[in-house]
Image (cartoon, rainbow, N blue to C red):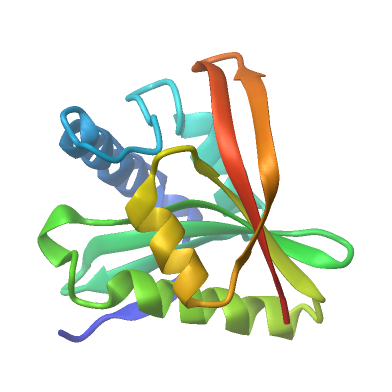
Length: 159
């Protein structure tokens, strides 16, 4: 499968939002989920902010979005958000290649570590991150306005 992973462009906002809406629909009855809901999280404003901040990356194959992630830049670290792969492209190593791109981005930014959080119980996501050297750092629960109370496992990887 041929694809490229690149920064999202402003004019792709609607396509990217439609991609995330499709992901939300595919997760409605899933055993493992990041608790995303259409028009709730991620919302169009979140995606637009990530695009404007040059944080959103898309995987493109045949002019179609097949994966995406947001990589926020902070003073000494990068943080990962919204990593997902189109259901038809799962189990083809795309998520792994997105993680490899995450490491390249963090290194280019001269970050010292990458942090992320995973909704408690999202076992496939946790296995992916652990495979790439992320270490469990703790738990946290937050009230997220558009979602409610959510508990996360937190991870970091020193690079």
